[in-house]
Amino acid sequence: MAYVMAFIKKYTALLIPVGILLLVLLLLIPTILTGKALRKDMEEISVRQGKSVRNWIDKAPSSKQSTIEEAYQDEHARDVDAVELQVRQSTMRELASYQVFPVPVDTSVQVFIDFGKKFRGKIDSLVTQMNARSAPTDQEVHLEILRRGGTSREDSSAGYSGRPRSARSRDPLAVVTLAIRDAFLEKRASQISLYASANLFGLYDYWENFGYQGPKAIEDCWYSQLALWVHEDIADTIASMNSNSKSFSVLTSPVKRLVGVSFLKYANYFIPSKTSYNRMSAAVSVEGDFPAYLSSSVTPLNRSAMSLNRSLTPQQQATSVLGVKAWTTRKCNEDTDVIHFSVSVVVESNAVFSFMEELCREKEHKFYGYDGKGSEETFKHNQITIMQFLQEPVDRQALVHSNYHYGDAAVVKLNLVCEYIFHRIGYDDIKPQAIKDLLNPPTVLTPGGRGSMLR
Image 1 (cartoon, rainbow, N blue to C red):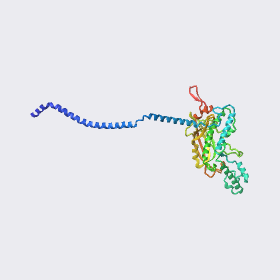
Image 2 (cartoon, one colour):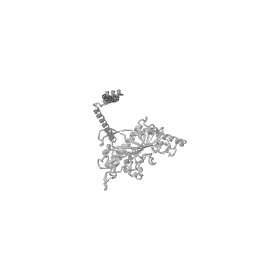
Image 3 (cartoon, helix red, strand yellow):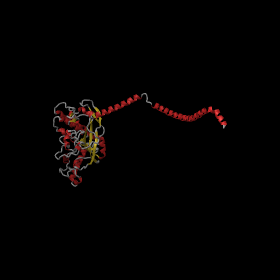
Image 4 (tube, rainbow, N blue to C red):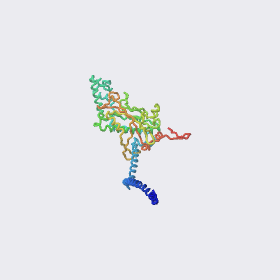
């Protein structure tokens, strides 16, 4: 024991350094281990950062990027300008007369009479463009049968009524008469591409019997011009559909007959009275079948349409004159004007969808400036959307098909209600002030300080 105590006394001075050494060793070992982990982590971080820097360097934009971006944005701007120009040009259309819009060149009634003559001339041109003609009247059939030696009896055996032929087969003279009639009808069908007449376009008769009614005459001209643009697209569609017909004959044409066009009612067959042999009148009132703007109010904007719609319920008025709700939700606003129209045709059953597609296809038109004196320009328009369509069977023995020869193909009656849009930027410059006021009634301040619309 004494030896131990002597040893401790001898080396007491070394206890503190030894303790410190042991403490250092205890701290150094974890530090070394931690340092290795830190170095590993630092190396990994450094590698990742190096890769990121290299990626950034690789993806760094070229010094020419700003120039490229500027050119890209300029191209976008040109696209916007091109779209705006095409929108404007789509409603820059040729006019029936350049003496009326936006104000008549003078106050004489002759200006409006001349407009009516030119309007009718345009419709006649559309009929010619479609290579169309009306079906023979009963009088024409009767005279042809007499000329060829058939019977003059106007009964079911003479072949005028379109009744089933089996009922007449026992009478030899009736058989001859029927053969003469069929040959005559087939000959007429082979000479034209379509059954149609100018009178099917409602305002054609209106302008033949035009009566000046003061300031309203300018409105008559304006709505007639809108109608003419629609008629032109319908005629273009039919002419295009029938252009591939090998013989340009009703017998082989996809579109056999234009039943009618209307802005105020569903287009349908017109059955002339027995006293009307020489003329196929349109099934519209003497007031005229004028287009009606589809406004945001419950009443369509057209003086004829307004009087027509007094008998309709508010819900009916809120749709359109034709009673069709615009599923496109398009109505007249600060950018566009909207109208609806109805068109009906007898068409081969396998050409129904082709006709609809052609009607809505982009079309070309000529423009000579709104004074008619500019150089000819060719623009494009695509303004028709189909709202509603219906197919009906065709009973060839019915009275409405008497004297019509459609050929051997299966045919149906196709009824369409369509939307037609006009871009104001394209034609507001020639829009009469009365029409502008109708579409954009002035705002006045009421005593309470609130604005109200006058109509």
